Length: 125
Image 1 (cartoon, helix red, strand yellow):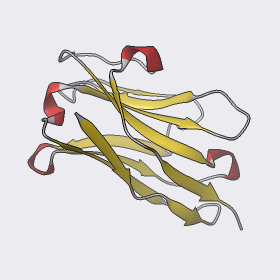
Image 2: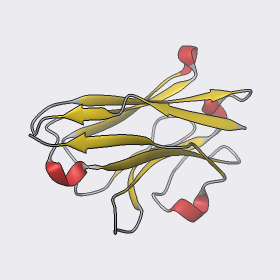
Image 3: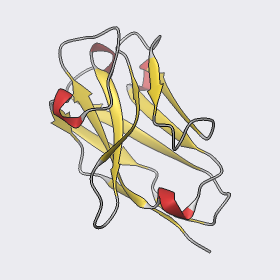
Image 4: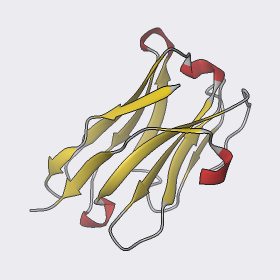
């Protein structure tokens, strides 16, 4: 089972990025998906998660109102739309999948079984 993140990059404060989490050889709809980030010298932070059925979403307080998580089943992809980015959002962002299917999700890394390699997001002027 392999997850692949994409969409990271360098953006100015106030800008937007959309991260994508795709998978090969398994269907993301069967898994709760979480987005995590880790900045240099800081602990990993659970940013957002979406349940298998996509009817339960959860966000960290630091990103509420700015980030949106969503699924596209046809593309087997989970997105993290990030708007009004701030310098403190700078980090490596990871997506992770939890098994078995769940109608809820949590932003705790230990709850996830499969992880991507990460994509760098840098917010700087």
